[in-house]
Amino acid sequence: MGRKLLLEHINEPGINTFAVYRQKGGYRAVEKALKTMSPDDVVEEVKKSGLRGRGGAGFPTGMKWSFLAKPEGVPRYLVCNGDESEPGTFKDRYLMTHIPHALVEGMIVSSYALGANTSYIYVRGEMMPQIRILENAIAEAKAAGFLGNNILGTGYNLEIYVQPGGGAYICGEETALLESLEGKRGNPRIKPPFPAIAGLYGCPTVVNNVESIAATVPIINDGGEEYAKIGIERSTGTKLISASGNINKPGVYEIELGVPVEEFIYSDEYCGGIANGKKLKALVAGGSSVPILPANLITKTATGNPRLMTYESLADGGFQTGSMMGSGGFIVFDEDQCIVRNTWNFARFYHHESCGQCSPCREGTGWMEKVLHKIELGHGSMEDIDLLWDIQRKIEGNTICPLGDAAAWPVAAAIRHFRDEFEWHVLNPQESQTRNYGLAHYADPLEPVVQ
Image 1: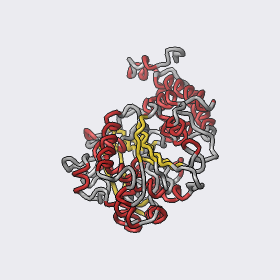
Image 2: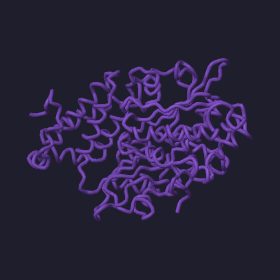
Image 3: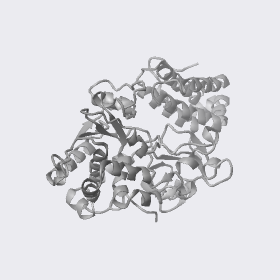
Image 4: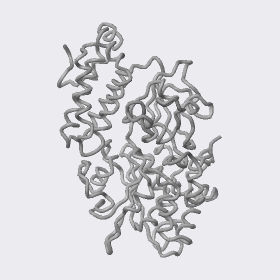
């Protein structure tokens, strides 16, 4: 069994309450940080840990904190990004639901390190149960003296507020999140300036993912160097993985980074193998926005080394033969799944969630959705496949925020690794139409895709 740092007490009855969480060692990190460490000491421990952002980008958390500007007389803010909207990802919701005090404790420790006296947890608007759970946890922590004025007699003051999100995928992008938090439409900002200089209300701000903030608790309790001993190379610590798709045991798993991908899929400790005795066909390793990998590149890299659950190993070979750890949304496809249909489904999502601020994304995502739908229903041509490739190439890298890249990468990888399936739909139109009978109602009613 791998070591558990965040989910160690997940099955303990009442762990969602302050009393039980405290009994199991909760809030020790707050006591240690506020009573025996300076804010800079806390930042240094997070740097030593090698913790990388668990929301998708994988940027070193301690380094991100060190970029925060500290002008005199200007407030600083910590904002927790709980707008978990990436298809295939549900580990933050799981953490907020079952161990909300882990996040609250992490918020206190992190806010202290950053010199923030007001912090926000921005939660996806559809997650109202989680919002209520967090509000209750904050109230419990405040009643116990861990929030408010003069926390534990140390002179440090902190208030934490939970803010429902705008119900949009784009609000998971940190600057769009800040716009939404300020009461504006959630459009991404042009950078620079970066949030560390001018973020919420124009003040220095750090935006971190739920899991990243919760991970600061074991780092402070055990020390950054001890945390860094877990994992491999620059992929340190543990990682929450949202496992779904054609597997026997879907759910949220905490792994020590470095577990072989093959072991994660087939081990009874984790996914338990492919459902119904089917064969493995493909994998999306880090949420819908990362490149899909075919079976031959899942268990081994292009150079023949075992593919590991680390940031480096999953990305080995670049987008030609690799993928990304991303947000940890691990989606498994068996031999019966249609890659074209899956790619079209992702494209529908990104078209719907585009804020429309950048023309390559606004026009390109809709165009890709329509062409994919056309191919899937048996009305496509070989030229349409080349057209798809050209569209995604012109979206990638040409938008203000990464949503354009997120929409382009799945299409590029699907064509790169499964072009034969696209060609099958073109060469077998009657079978495609028969297999997809009833699918046409998903078409854009304003612009139906027909020949």
